[in-house]
Image (cartoon, rainbow, N blue to C red; front, side, top):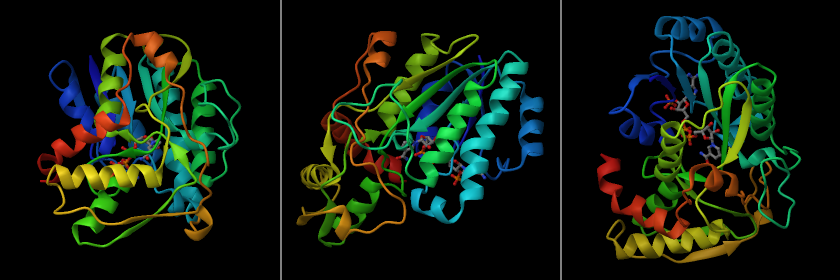
Length: 294
Ligand SMILES: NC(=O)c1ccc[n+]([C@@H]2O[C@H](COP(=O)([O-])OP(=O)(O)OC[C@H]3O[C@@H](n4cnc5c(N)ncnc54)[C@H](OP(=O)(O)O)[C@@H]3O)[C@@H](O)[C@H]2O)c1
């Protein structure tokens, strides 16, 4: 299949490339090649490559920056998927698009299901939600994959940030009142490739599926586990103290959901595969740390 992958330099994009490149004709797009905020450039890219499937991992993912730059967030998280879905619908191409736990309010007592009511609390969450709605407004075969708390060995995510500090011997303060499922970009890429290989992108309608590693823990618990395991595996020299703090002691511009756990049973039913537990995924990420840091 001829697949066009946006965001090829992002953490998910980089994990998808090795899984797809041997079985498909893969067209990679990066910001340097095509500025995806420019509709004319997006159309030119699509017309040039005529993909059979578009996998859109590109987004504005900087949650706090989105509060200050709502127009940019809207261009990338809402208008871009709208344009991609319009083109894919017209050209009978499939679309895989990624969305987020931030479309939910954060108030729940069980994992979020795909059809639970949405109620985004931040600019990032709202623009991603508008992106989902825009896709659903087109006659297109599309899969919207909602995921959460994505990390990798690449710079610019929670795990890299805390291990960077721990490597310098700096102790950590981490919030313990936001609960979710930390998800390794490698697990998310594996699951996405399985959906492609098993042909679960619908031909003529839009479906949503949740994909996250298994587990429901706080950022604090994740940081403790990560520091302990990273020290054991030689990623950092030694563990550093991790202090639990409340969100009120760690002010951030964008409001974060308190409860972000996603129910992934639809994915399991579709593919017959289950998502790895977060401990297993974290260990795998750390085992490949130096390879991915180069
Ligand atoms: N990260 C998370 O915790 C998380 C959680 C839930 C859902 N998601 C969703 O999962 C998907 C993948 O996330 P990720 O963590 O892989 O994101 P990421 O690492 O931030 O990658 C996003 C990609 O988008 C590209 N991009 C941004 N602005 C662009 C522009 N104007 N033109 C072209 N490309 C542009 C970036 O290019 P550069 O590399 O040049 O910057 C980057 O490669 C996104 O849809 C995100 O919303 C992520």
